[in-house]
Every structure is written in structure tokens, then in C-alpha cells.
Amino acid sequence: AFVSVTESFSTDNAVGRLTMGLLATFAEFERATIAQRTSDKMRAARRRGLWTGGRPVLGFDLPPGGKKLVVNEDEAAMVRTIYDLYLQKKAITAVVDEVDRRGWVNKIHTTRAGKRMGGGSFTKHAVHFILTNPLYAGEVRYLGEHFAGEHEAIVSAATFQRVQDQLAENA
Image 1 (cartoon, rainbow, N blue to C red):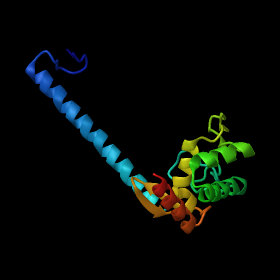
Image 2: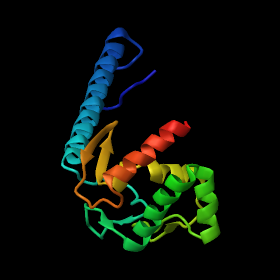
Image 3: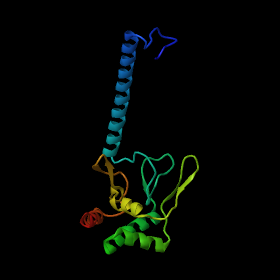
Image 4: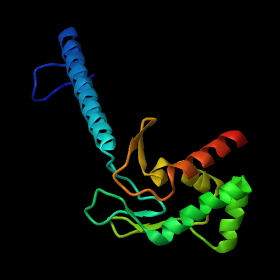
């Protein structure tokens, strides 16, 4: 049972239970409204091609206070090589083996709190993420939709599509 010290209702009787039900309904409505507004704002930002947050991926940096991804040329060369390797070898595991042989590691970044993250070995999942992420072709994705990004592409749209076709064929 719920008894309020500052209000004159209690869940021990029908009126108190009705009041609690109404309060819970309004709270649920408010939560749903906030969620919808957040979703609409993110979709609008993605339609404009903006980066909406999160950890920058391999090949891109996020300047302090910036909202636009900037190409990191050293990492971008790695990404282009991963795409080329996949088109040559046609297998993610072969790409992982070659990347490991070269001693490459995942993106290293520093959080706002100053903690360094990343730097681990490439896995099949990490390579697959790179090969399927439309950011590298200059696009942003939101709930399955792709929009032209505000950032520069690292690989051409044609190369990205060839990789997607090869991945689909291998599946």
C-alpha cells in the first residue's frame, strides 16, 4: 500500500487507487512524449547529415565541441585497405588475419572523463562493422534509413556497394 504524507490519498481505498492510476497514466504519457520528441529530433538531425553522437569510428575524429566528423587520414588509409582486402580475398576472416599480421588495432579514443578506450585487435565483428557502416561512404543511418552525411566519404559509393554485394553473396 502507498500512503502519502503530503497528500490526502492512500492506496488502501478505491479513491486512492484511482488517483495513483491517473498519476501513473500521466507519467507514462509524459515519458512517451519525451521519447517521441527525442526520436524526431534525432531523425531531423540525421536527415541534415549530422553526427548525432557516440564514439567516433575508425577513420574519423570528432573535434572538441564539434558535431561534424573529420577524416583522420592515417586511419582512413587503414579503412580503405580493409575494403580493398575484402574485395580481393572475399572473406572477412582472411581480412582479419591480414590486419593482425600488419599489427593494426582498433580506434583508440579518449572519453570526456579522460579514460583511453579501444586499441584492441580486430575481430570478425569489427571488420564486418567497418564493411557495412555507411559512414564510410559519406552517409548517416537512422532506423534503417540512409541520408547524405555532412562529413567526407572515405570510400566511394561504388566501392561500398561492391562490398555490400559481395557480403550478400557470401551470406
